[in-house]
Image 1: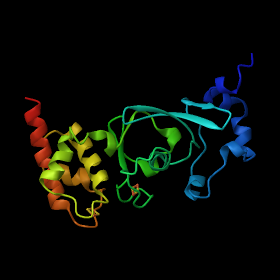
Image 2 (image 1 turned 90 degrees about the vertical axis):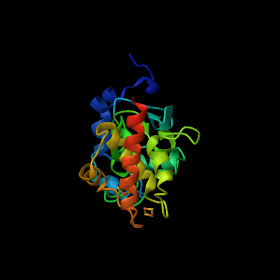
Image 3 (image 1 turned 30 degrees about the vertical axis):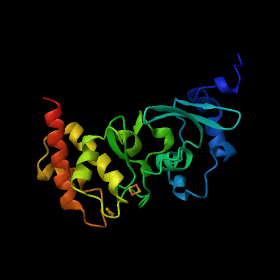
Length: 211
Ligand code: FES
Ligand code: FES
């Protein structure tokens, strides 16, 4: 029974004419010239995607807010956050997983948002905008202020998200733990000593709060 285009699940779509669409370069699978590296990825329709009159409609939860977006499944999460949702605290550095400026959490795990296609997002997304609030800072954000970590600041939202993910799994990291976890987050200003100190301060704050 035909239930209308909005009722189609991604699974049904994929099994019926998805492959044909891909093979024939159907406009639904248009690859934006702005992100030519999308061509390197396979096309995939996640379960949370349906077909709307305007195109692919995707559901994402970002910083505790549910969104329905008409976007291409191959769009990097970084561009969804910055261009579609205006969350410009998430930074674009290299676009090739080499700098960490774009780090966000998906289901609590630190990821490079430039490397995760919107259609591959597997859980709630947390960005620097949702980690804490100006009134109630996350312990890592507070420690960053205490130690005046930022210089130019460009890398720092990614650094903070990476540090928060580290402390969620390793509450009392030593220097080696910190260096290992933070080594993929580059800082052209060389704030690494202050980052290490701030992570230790945040760890102490969280430990005190948990008593
Ligand atoms: S912008 Fe994603 S790792 Fe550099
Ligand atoms: S503070 Fe300038 S790049 Fe890190």
